[in-house]
Length: 141
Length: 92
Image (cartoon, rainbow over all chains, first blue to last red; front, side, top):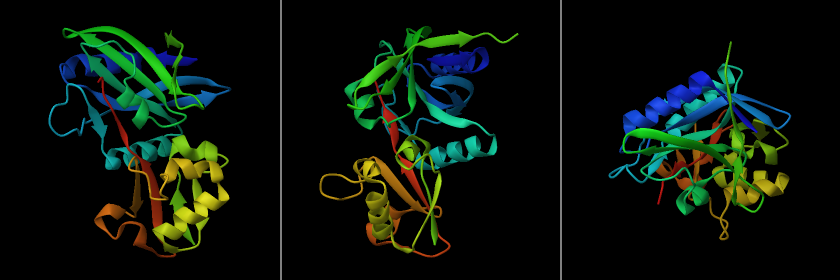
């Protein structure tokens, strides 16, 4: 189960739409307690892919190190990564799977013709295959 | 002892330990030590030829070992080694 608070959800959607037709990317921070993850904050990161960014994203090692440091300093956990699939469904590709890390949640946002369409999240299982995580949007009072 | 920082996704293979103190030497020595003490970590660090996987970056201080002497890069007692997973993907 992956809970996403409304603010980080809005920020991811905004990044995905703004970056269309290129892929956006960023980090997810929050808490992981008793197998229930809650995304409390995101960090937008530059897509460091050289050349065509409509089908690929890359996050630099320096940005990764900064994200681990940010989590440490803010008493949060680095929960995973989000990216967008412009004009494609939010289903991980083989390229996503090969590059994926264990433990991380991989949120994918589908943007169709410049408009946010849907969001799904995935996690690698022990056989290195993606399994979908159920998403719950958490409204804060 | 050098300090090795384990990235979040690999901590489940190091008993949830984020920082390890390992005897200095070379990057290869550090990787060998990690592989010996945490066998499940090995397949995430090394390929079938025993080389550091292409999806794994290793930094000594602020420097990528690919810009230094790769696995032969020396590690001092006060060095901080960061293992950094490559984060990439895309829709095709």
